[in-house]
Image 1: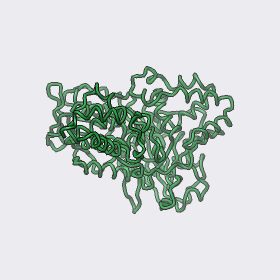
Image 2: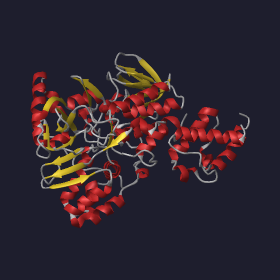
Image 3: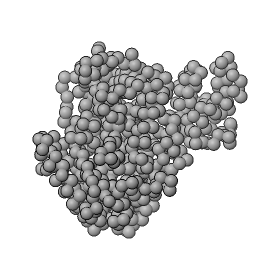
Length: 83
Length: 465
């Protein structure tokens, strides 16, 4: 997957978790937590969805990398480039 | 072999089932009763639809709100706000002799009512609001959780009557302990009732249950009604499965039980003695009246009225009679702001809940039991009309359910509506792969039960796979 594919996939997951959210105006630099008011349960869901959909394993100590769209895509790029 | 076996198809079991099935677990929900819902079920009688437990859903949130338990459960279960579509309450009231406090889903109304009736106490009330535990402190780790709510209230409020009045709705809607309340539980209920408020789906609890079941089955989850669990088989200190009432054995890697803490322990075949005294004591009767007109046509526009007929609020099991109508809850499901396309419910309904003694109800022989349902209905209604317009000449149909009914639906000891007073907030048991969810895990009410199922599934059944 290219970084653009990964971004689209994350958007799809966020849309699944929070369907009432307008994701078109998401700022890729800014924290998800502040923009979407995601809490720890929601972050766990992003991790779980990635595992469910793509068998990508994310260890708990790496959860901090999922703070914003940009940090998430760069963290996932090596893990998902061969998918 | 199931990944997780869930005992009980109430709100918490179904919610947990959805979480696990969504993340590809093989899940089976076992329910002893012939229908889903547990305490929050529904039935049809004489051509009319009834809810068993629902007066109001607490934790109201409007569409688009992202904070709070309702928003959280909608996200976690992948629902949309419209799936529940809660109509907001018109307004509720706490009524004691000579004093009345109205409240709605905006805390400012309660605050102004307090300034009107207890002018010296409004600062104390604001202080109390500021000292409430947050939801993130509600996992039981806060040392404040187990404090006496009465003690904390007395630190902020001098007027004993105001303390009784504030406690009355919160105890009625979610306190398993007699006379006092854990401060943590108080905070959960204060947020749920006063800060977030009441709502109701137009079609009542069935719409919520049907959505939960449809989603669970759509994800491949198995739901087996009339499948009572008689035993949890524990081998070498681990749960290996369950034995059904008909002797069938079902294996599971882990078990999540909504049967209640004492009740679940009793199911475990490695336990020989039980402290049954830990079971809850508080049960209710509910007297339902169908009217020939809307309650507002007889001058009753309140969604819920919590009444108490003296200055002291008595929250305990009636010791001397079948029921204690000194305090009660009056609810009209008509008095919500349903939107115009929904319109108004077809029948005018008044539901009255009063405290009842489970053992005394269960001792009655069948003819006496039937007769007492009629007598106690009359007493409950007579007690309630002291605090609302007398509706008795407009009644066209009635139904009553008792602690015996509640026990049949929930299988909880003593028909205890809010379970045991000592909650197991982290859901763990003496067996490492057996967990509790539902009433005895701490959160109560429909939203609370669903949140309990979600959080226990996340914490104990998903993180480890």
